[in-house]
Length: 275
Image (cartoon, rainbow, N blue to C red):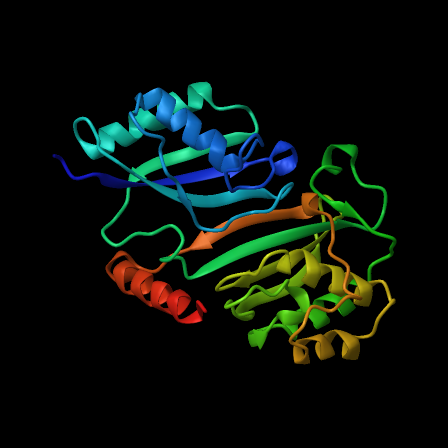
């Protein structure tokens, strides 16, 4: 029997009408939608099984999501991939788009080979353009962007983000924040908070930005915010912002010759955290 080939999918979606990424019985999800249509257009005997770089929550959007699927191609893998992309473009609903399907390099794993994920959360502290209302969260402003940005930059480096995460048995809340800053977009007027880390806990970005908004609007001071990094349990006073302002913008991977090593390292680290 011919060995399956791993294919990388680069995709985007409007999360408003999805119950998150992960497939759930009787609920519309991104994974469920994609697996259904891949299985259908290829007439597979068994349902396709997608692995994703980062599972997004209900209502969260993605512009640069990455997934992989193992399939047995008919003919050359590159031609098979291009044909799959064309077929999906014809049948997928308007709120999910597969930009590219490509044969994955040796050692590629959408989840475990990733070295960082970059999210942007968009905030409106004045009446927003009505066309942006589904992609920005309205807050009681005005926001002091400089204060918010200064607080965000204290997140850089390796920290325990337990104050912003719902703790799970056997899982760590230690993450490395590689990029953290905020700026006002001169075109839209929205305040954009960018966070890039090796990984994120469930609802971590929405919680971090909720705390940053408290600083930016003067409800809390910077000392309170930095003090959250000394706590290991979920901080009840931190607001988890609504999901529609959050977009997964990009996922980063190492060079092709380092993919297998990264995948092995990440899997080993996960296994060590299991109870």
